[in-house]
Image 1 (cartoon, helix red, strand yellow):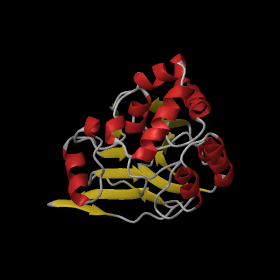
Image 2 (cartoon, one colour):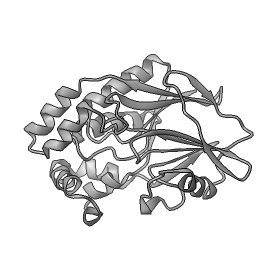
Image 3 (tube, helix red, strand yellow):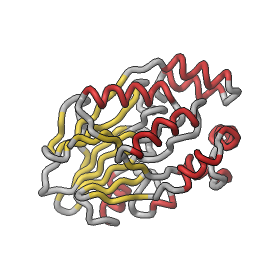
Image 4 (cartoon, rainbow, N blue to C red):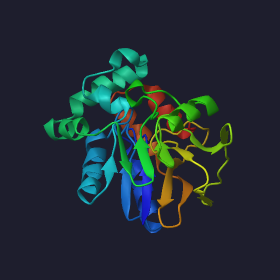
Length: 246
């Protein structure tokens, strides 16, 4: 089965619907959402409605730090722009949305794969995996052959070698075989807030049968998403960054 892995959606409905449609065309049979479903963007309820539908069909999801902030926690640890967004998002959510977010685990294991928003080393600490040392800590915290994570908003791929961890530069659209002789950490980038200089939404397709992962970049109507952010009165920077992926 092919599973689409979507992380850091950040209430960006245009990016989410574009990625989901693309994934279905690629043969995705279900979806896994790696947290930060809300925050920053202007469509938290609409995004959660779509995610809820996929969870009812057998999809899975974990909680991110912005989801936690939307429930009432963590705001003292956020910058001012993220904090303003979290307060705004809280006011948009009703009981059904809060119940959905509150029920999400910090990580979950399915077969060979472990799904987590930040690092498996300490999921509640929301550590950023910024290099090989933090990647090593993440992999060492679990015996899962493949760990899927988000949080850093940049697509990255790490794999184990004797004595440490190395990185691999995956090409979008080209499947990467995940050899069983190594362990893998797949960082998916962001659906709704890319920050690697490419404004196209990012997600991965995990082929469990072939044991491979394919990174995808999907153009979407980021101008429409930006207009919604401005109309909602959210910080203008959140709209501007969508056009440049930064």
